[in-house]
Length: 216
Image 1 (cartoon, rainbow, N blue to C red):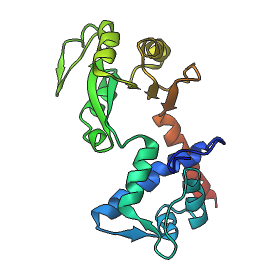
Image 2 (cartoon, rainbow, N blue to C red):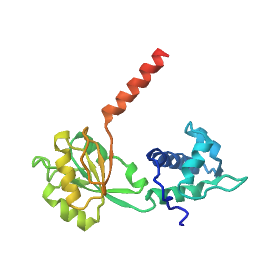
Image 3 (cartoon, helix red, strand yellow):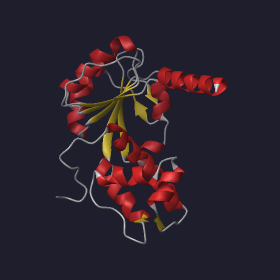
Image 4 (cartoon, rainbow, N blue to C red):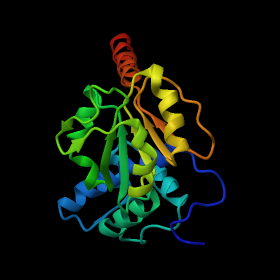
């Protein structure tokens, strides 16, 4: 078995999400020129146990060296390979509103292996406009752009009422993964990867945590 291939059993979503947290912390240690770290140190940095760290990594193969721990640079490379970010992914954005414009200006995508290459909007008043490095394209150019630029990932920053329609268009055009910022659940085929970010829900979770702290 490939050392970085997942085992046959399904991998829990929380374990996959924690891989991104591990990677972020490892990259910070790499910037600090830390050569090695232990599972205990990695766990403590994220308020996790060392057993949890070892269990998460064990889904993907053998990691670490007895008496040494993990070589930071090597572990970064392997986690990136597991997450698929050891290569550059072309990404498109649908929605040139306030949220979309904020993402156009975000400089962190390329550092993580994502290259925002095209922006679309259904509003004729926005299409053709030059926003930073992008010219907003009409939805009619969706499929040829996806094919020409080999785009597999898309970000949805559209109103909730249009999110399902746009998602359907993206899937028909060949998109395989959707990051949805619209506050609505999408009906997506099983062979399409999707992840939703609802900012209001995140604030609700913070509100609950603060309320719990006050009452404790």
